[in-house]
Structure formats: structure tokens, C-alpha cells
Length: 180
Image (cartoon, rainbow, N blue to C red):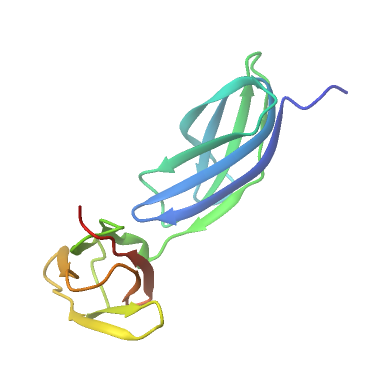
């Protein structure tokens, strides 16, 4: 029995804004043509949603990433690794589930004076945006404009630091930097 064509170190996924991001790493590769990223709604019937080129032959760790830009509310993912001779093998299967909070985008981050909150959630349940300092002290409460898909939040009076933004069940870090 020879060495495996590809030694997969990890295969993980996360929801990020409006996409699902899949990351994987290999320890070594022999004759690796490409990876086919496969997705399934039920964990049984998979379809190929993209291809990522392999490094052919490598004895060094390689990092890969793929973004599913049209994710399902819940999905199973796996990798099909294909050699130059057409032989293939599958990775383990991972599962990702999305919720309304995944439809929130906050930018820019890091920020200088303001951030924008953009949401695609049709029924955003939160009506308040809260900004906390790193010590957990509430700095500002902002009423959510439920009619707008994007809202500008002025944070120009804040000092350079890390802040926490809370919007319903969604929470993220914001990094304030000084302008140039």
C-alpha cells in the first residue's frame, strides 16, 4: 500500500454574512488535480457547486478556501479530491445551519468614524442596536430603522479601541482606528 495521494489535515466550515465559507488544509499532496466541493440538503444526494485547483505534488502544508455564495438554510458539505489519473476519494461530511443573524453585514471593520449595518432579514426582530466598550459598559443605544436595509451608525466620538455591537441575538467586535 503506497502513500495516500492527499493527506487532509482539516475540513471546517462557518457562516459568514451571506455566504458559507469552507476551509481545509493538506499536509502533503501527490498528483492532486483538484477538489470538487459538494453540497447536499439531506446528507444523501450531493451536487458539485465548485472546483478548487490542487497543488499537484507538495510536501508542505497547503491552505484552501471556498465560499458558497448561494447557501441553503442548512447544508451538508464534503470534498471530492481528484487525482490526475481520475481516481478520487471523499472527505468527511460537515454540516452548516444558517439563521436570520447570518443575513447581517457590518462594514467597514476596522472603522474610523462610522459603520453601516445591512440586513436582508425580512422580519428583523431587534429594534435596538447597542454598542458596548470592551469592559461591557453600554456606550450607545440606537433605534433600528426597520424600513431601511442599511443603517449608518456614527461612532466618530469614540476613542481607538475595541467595541461590541449587539443587534438582537447577533454580536460582533468592532475595532475603532484613528484616521490618517
